Length: 361
Image (cartoon, rainbow, N blue to C red; front, top):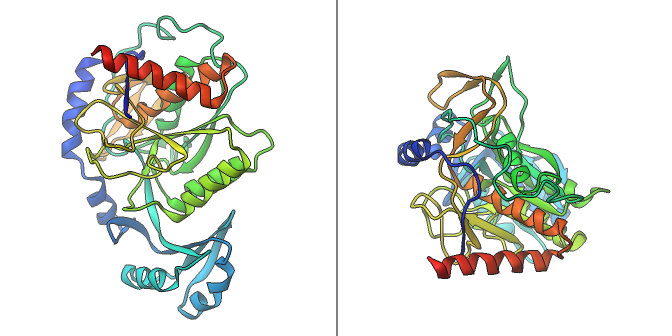
């Protein structure tokens, strides 16, 4: 059951109205295709010429794929990434369909984007307080949180169109769990673009970490019509090695009822917003307001989606999207874990809180 949570973040209603209206004007899919960063693959978008193989029998098909012109270019966990520069999407899809079998999964390398990439980054007012009212300073103490997100590095002194996304997400977690140990893990580039393999590699690394997180936040979504093989494998590895880890993901901003990945995975808590732009459905676990949320943003010159440059000096912006709903739930869970609740108890407590608010509406 989807539960509605009241937002405890600072909200800018003017920014919220203009940003939500802008959602209908942006077509991230068309932009990726036009820039040659993606090709159509079934009902999704994929990295041109790339194919992923996963599962216990993954080595058994490498000779066949080599005969088709594919070369191994990377490995992570139980996933192998191959490339054929001139392979067409239809050829890759045919190979995947013909070779799949027990213990063997193949897919195009689907594109993954930050859930608000290319949509809005309008400057907003400074928040009225460093922490939302009523949050004790010690919340989240001793809890490790991993933010799998965009790289925060700039190129040529100019921040990418999604640079700052991870800083903003981390700030929302810290607002609700100020003593949590929040760490950034780069999986997407500064424009908020990556792939199934990129995100899976970050998750595999976390699964093998000597200091694993208690919570993982994924404010990103794949252009895939079904569960992508690499992220599915990595989430399975996480559940096997770290059965207590909680993974929270943004539901996406397309207003669709069909599942969005990785949020729709069984081991992931999907978070949307009670707004028309938010994806929704049986697979969404929580909804929380995320329209015109004011949070931390790196100072510097930033490239906007329209190609213009804007200099951010005050260190804060107002942003909208399910990217910023997910970390609010992550922060609430970190606070509950910091109070000594088990992961299952923390999720149950949050569900009870959400259901009581829904009943009172």
